[in-house]
Amino acid sequence: MVFQCEIAWRQILLHKALQEPLLNVQVSKSVEYYSLLVENVGSIPAYSVGIRGIFDKSGKLIPLAIRFQKVQSFYSSCLRPKEQIILATISIDFYNEYLDEDSGFIEISYYDRFYEEKVLRCYFFTKGVVTIPIKEKPIGFLLTLIDDYETLKTLQRLKNYILGKPYK
Image (cartoon, rainbow, N blue to C red; front, top):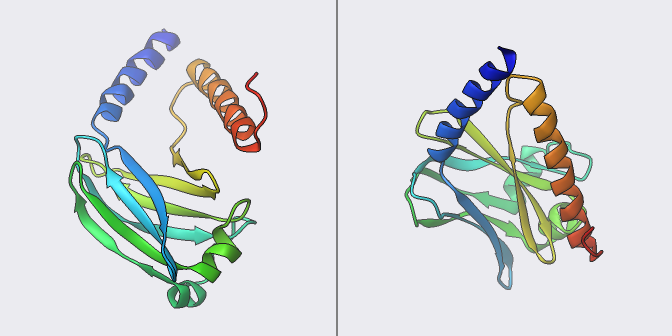
């Protein structure tokens, strides 16, 4: 009975996942600053897209006084499908100090069509940006264990790819 409830709950979550926007995050460099570009590559709009926070290497939120001097952030009330915006412009010295490889990260928040907040955590590497969706732990025990194991394997493969180690 418990397993059937977990499967039913997963079907509801799958239906909701199919209704979520799909965002692509990129960084482009100019002479004076980096631009954080966000594109909705899916067919569902994202609402209230903005930067939730910028964090240093230890995971602490960078104070707003420092952030406002070096980062100009923007906001989009609705990011339609196939639309791209510049979400932030980041000075080169701030990027090199806080966001360069093996440093901090940026959290981007948005709302889906059910008005549930979603968060993407963006890590920056020389090969590009890695985005990891921050999600709540689903209800249940058995299927959650399987999810945790699969996530661990995926993160290990990603680490090996970034470090240039062969896939195992």
